[in-house]
Image: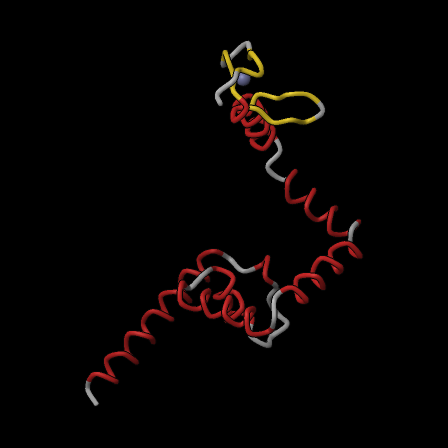
Amino acid sequence: MNEIVKICKKHGKLAKKDVYLYKKLVCKKCNNEYHNKYRRKHPEGQRAYARKYSQNNKEKIKFKNKVYRQNFSLEQRKDKFKKTKLTLSDDYIKHLIIGKSKILKYKNIPKELIEVKRLHLKLTRKLKELKNVNK
Ligand SMILES: [Zn+2]
């Protein structure tokens, strides 16, 4: 099972689970190190790349979303959303903060605001709980 498929100068003998196949075999650890270094050097790079990708692949993304909607029924999507409601995920809170206003956009919401809103939600939920107990 753990057959040696490559020998890395830095990490020695590598089995199949330690390598990627990208045109040729690549050591996973070296690959991760390389990308971490790159990311540290270019902190804006990833975001810029994502933006560029979405601009150049509008049709592709639209299609993907369409497929997603076809694969998951409205009920399933609602269930997924309910889960985010229970866990108070960032996305759910952003959704609440934005509401119907067009002032804020998802990417412009500061982390602090999300935290405050999360606390607020916890508080109102707790109050609701207490109210039900005291009935
Ligand atoms: Zn390596």
